[in-house]
Length: 310
Image 1 (cartoon, rainbow, N blue to C red):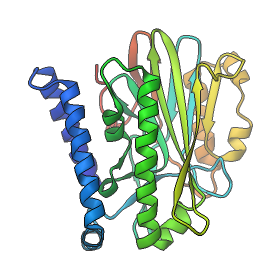
Image 2: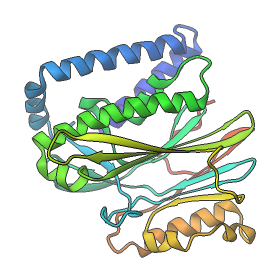
Image 3: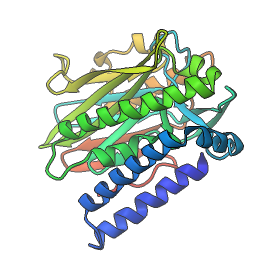
Image 4: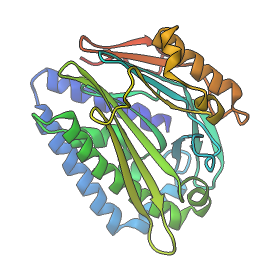
């Protein structure tokens, strides 16, 4: 998976450089991405059995399901900790670093990874089975594919939602057929959360998309739920959005922001979630991002987090 992450980073850098040099436009790049994903998906359908054989042979390289774990729903029993604070003018986002990788045989491993990503002016964080290259399950690439010239963030997120649900459905069905242990433990009746954060027209916004993986006796299906803020923000300001160890999150209240600044509250809550989690599925260091009408900046980050792109 390190090879895959490195490849994606190199691809992003090359694409950005070509666009900045005027050799291609962003629209041309996104159109090409769309074409390549469509071609890959057709090949996937035609040669499914052969592809699975290659995955088994190269399991150490690409046959890995990567997960960000979540404990807010007790059935999952695992956690990534994410805390966001939205005020009328700013968004602060903090996330832990510990990632759980799950191989096709169900064995797990852990690594540190930057869980905050960027595509243009949109920043994102995912919780659940968020990346699997053979089926096109990749938040960054699908978000790039979802972009259109002149589109609003809402429109981009809506297109992403449809693309991601389709890719998650394909991934879940492959897991169901080829890796039952992974499917039963990490897919069936589970939830995938994807959050987007941006400042558009000087208004801080976040978008929550929840994908639920369902299957009774028939094929896997994926249902989606959504919350956009605005317009669906809670009545009080500022707003705290928290996901992590359940007991810690239950005690989380916007009242904390009356006596302490957002960055301090975020750090305290994430540290408490890491400390209290008996399974130690969440871990530091903590990365914190600040968004405002003046742009985005890292408050603190580890070396795995790339610099903010203009």
